[in-house]
Length: 302
Image 1 (spheres, rainbow, N blue to C red):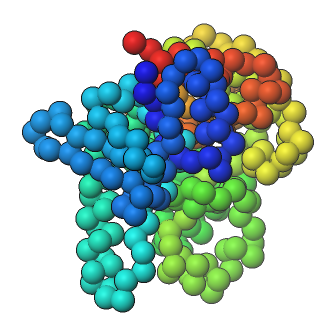
Image 2: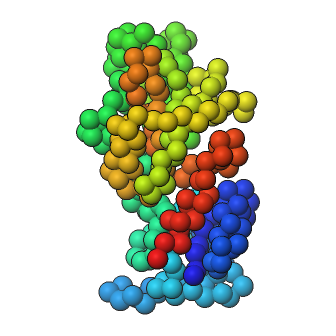
């Protein structure tokens, strides 16, 4: 059974999963896209199932023989620096187009897929999709209009802000952020995501196939990802929320995910985010949840 891990040996999660899959009897290789086109070779004949991936060292895999792919990280391609910027652009575009095409044409089971990854990059759409399921989300504004931003902040008791694309931790909006000149300059550079701050308890739910494992995260930080000392306490979700976890994963095309909730004092769960490639080793070690075993089931499913 040939299984690929999209990523490389510099990532502890990729290494952990590769070791676990190997011990379970699978043949596992890293698919580090940064090595394309300099060291990786890709071929595909559109309209046919004929295609291949040749790894560094010469190991060649037919697309048809790749059982599954675990999406740990995607780093694009690497084009050596060329003197001609036009040639550089053409080489980059052609390499990325080839890579995107092969990823989407590869018939393996993807955990998770290109489509799921693309959806995650559009976080406002993710929020909108989840709200359409009847699940509560925070009051949110995506904008680069200083007037709209100021008005939104005036309607909320507390507001947090973060990049629209993600990739940075949450911060509270302060009066200094709303100083007119500073606000105008910042919003000319990029829009921002603003959300009403939801007081309550942090809950993270890992969804792997039909399995759901959740824990309360006790932290004093506004964004618990900043807190290495956060306490993790396994909890049982209400059945309705467990079903919402499964519905979110399905709607966002996720074979597995970590969903972050804020549990209010009223008992209401508010959706914050669903990650298509979450870190899980620390969580698994602290809670004892069998996340690795569940991932192996997904990746080795016949």
